[in-house]
Length: 508
Ligand SMILES: Nc1nc2c(c(=O)[nH]1)N[C@H]1C(S)=C(S)[C@@H](COP(=O)(O)O)O[C@H]1N2
Ligand SMILES: [Mo]
Image 1 (cartoon, rainbow, N blue to C red):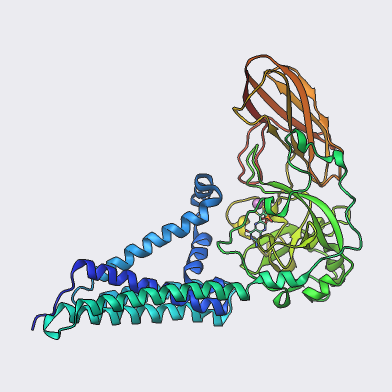
Image 2: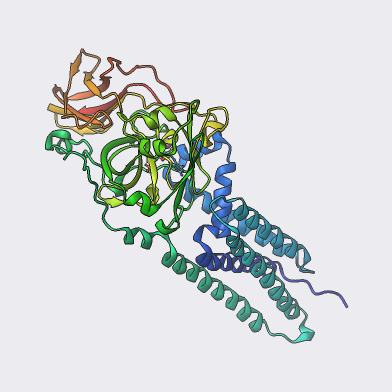
């Protein structure tokens, strides 16, 4: 007797339904063992770490902060196509499809296995995916084939019902996983932390520290508005009670701190402006917060840093790493912190809850490890951090820069008195002067806001008469070392952009 063949449609849909069952089962189990064990997310995260730098730069430039959504959607399209193909290959026998489904399942297992932030139980999630995918495919294939052989008398309705049943089951399982994950995630742990009260609060921000009424940002950035940059596709979920920080390497004694150990120390609060090395001239990757935590120097002194130590190599729970100069971390005048709070709250989860590093004056990729769980005191030659391996600079002090916030580029404003305003930063050195040039004329000194501390930005404004027509405004900052921002344009790679910000506007 000839083996009945499935129609193309039935075969393709069968593959996709089995895929849905697999992903949903994985997501459900991930609800129990940790949301990042979901094989879909794990594969995405793995893809980010394997992406070549040029492609990553292209993605960030083209899609901006949507780059991760684009990645997830792209993966979905590829998966659906592969699943449909698996079905189409299996019109006669289920074996080709089963091989493809198993292959996908193994990719998920491998991706979860490779995550440094997940332990062995996490493998249950991709394993569930694998089993559910294979089972759903085999089961539906058998029903569909019996339907295709009319002698067996299985009605089309039965097959459709079975398929719909699997789809509904997948939906319920996926949703259940999502809800479960939420009850176990870091959010409830963060809420339980409550208010962090520093013994030394940061000096109050004076009213004339910003010119927000003139169009500059507010001096302190609200947590919800603070820029965010990281390689994490899904935010690491670490509960305070599960967190610990291991301090080891070239030290006299290794120390492990629990959350309570840090929280119960006398906490300090410092106002610090952070900047990302990927900030283009005129960009938005710069923000200021009141960070609460402990002095990094205190922890390092407790451990006893040995002579010859050069690098503080920090690791995040998600495997991301960063290398900071030990000298900067130990320098009391700089005020490097292990931070657990931000603007009166425990650190937001996307900004590193339970704890992160903040070292004023250095770009974030060499100073600001979020979800930090390991500090190794070492040398530069012994360890290479995440972005260093990908071609970025080893030491990356923040470059003196300034930005025009108002008028906006290509804005039309009434002619007559026009006010330009913006920000300038030279963390750890401090801003001394800000100059503005209009339409290629002479440089004119702008009014600076009151300095809060050398580790924070300063705001500025200047007023001038603008005749009707097009105008161009340029700004440049001079820091307290006497250095004036170079006009020479440099890109962000390898250690930060340079050049003057300039905008064009029209007066009417
Ligand atoms: N774990 C982890 N920490 C990280 C990063 C990261 O990708 N992973 N990115 C760094 C970079 S490049 C910057 S600029 C800052 C940004 O911190 P924010 O997102 O809180 O603004 O975090 C740093 N810490
Ligand atoms: Mo960054």
